[in-house]
Image 1 (cartoon, rainbow, N blue to C red):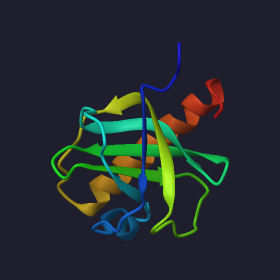
Image 2 (cartoon, helix red, strand yellow):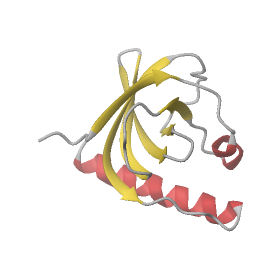
Image 3 (cartoon, rainbow, N blue to C red):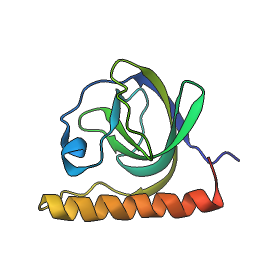
Length: 120
């Protein structure tokens, strides 16, 4: 049984840059599948390398946002694969930026704990 429930392929597009403003930049691609909204554990495959990632599926905008751990390059215009694994939580409407940062940091901590059990 595979750890990943779906794989999406697409060209990285510019988003609203909200993740970047919070300190969690994302690579955004259009959703090509029907995946429930929420935050997932995953990884991004780019140029034959695998990068662990926290994935946000935004069904309202039809976007997959991937925050890649230990990655700082720009991927605009590049084609990537996003593999989606275990769902961590449903979407949340944050009251402020501090609440968003704390929640995203907790999501990343959960991702790192899972990676210890299931390395990419």
